[in-house]
Length: 246
Length: 246
Figure 1: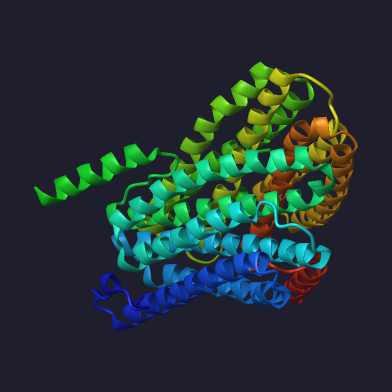
Figure 2: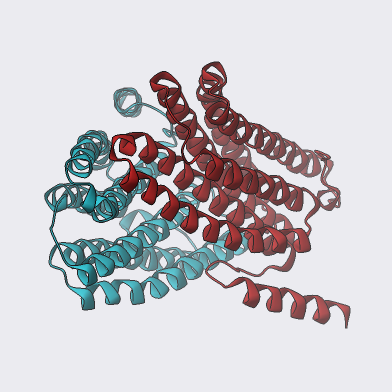
């Protein structure tokens, strides 16, 4: 994924270009870090790897620092450069997506914490298959949402929105399965409940990936598609593209 | 709580003043709506009031619309008025806090949904005492966070941050209690799990109130106090106040 965004290189002021490219590069590297955090948190859980879990928790601080740095850079751009049109939408979208990335970091750290607890306790791996499955889904979602952001690709963004609807369904079904595990073997309640929290975190990560994808559509089309069904969004984006082509 | 913010009435352009006051009024009325949503969602659960639960779910749409409207107004202010210093911080903080308010709405709707399920199923009210207690705490937190925002009162904001630390502790302890309920009576697992989700939502609502309080400190002091301990924040705010007085 290139750290340089071609859509941002059209300004007369080269300082303006540099500012925007710099914050964009920082945002993309934050995105890459979060993708890794989610991957590592899931591996730490599934492979019972305590040191990897500790590593995820440690890197959470770097995520928090990056969040503050990116917001500071965006504020400076707003104060000095007065961006307009697509540039302003890019700055606003990056500020929103920055919050989502940091929350993905929070959820990853939570998963890592649970991975540590489960490692230390030992015992069965009930619910891990579900966690692996949904974990893979949301990893792909984050990757594709960030890729859509980097390339300002609304088609890719729509793909993420559709995937989120899938993930929500899988999460509902996995929750029901885990509940039957608890009822079948009440001695496992505390353990299965921990896996349930992991699934919940993964589902939240999927929501944040969806939010980032929605911001891509906002940047490119100027459409606020939050709280809108995927079918409706698809219709709006297609109509808008046709209008542009006329 | 006045809907007019005295700190925002110092601009030469009266149109600028009007724009800022208008979005501020919208933000405050959104805050009031969310305070009511949380209160109603908790009542719906505790009083087994299905029609109140349905009402909360219905009003979720109004919350979503307000979120979009506020963000749109903020974007127009950024594009046309190029706010600087405290005005710019106010616009940025309102944009962040707007997201937090909408998430509080999501959590309220989730609680309302669970209230409906529990009503329909009937049965014991295990865990309701904990929900009532934490529910009251977070309702006060939202009220005080919004009040701090309206009056730009950093002392009040600090109070909310301290309350959040309390709520997190109460939440941990309530979770443990509910887990013992499940182990004692596995037939109640599904029901207690639903109450556990309510507690989780309430804890998240507390986090959002905390986020809003942090934004108040950012507006007034220009300090980004996210990811900082309450003691550290208190020290920073006090130092900054002393500096101003010198």
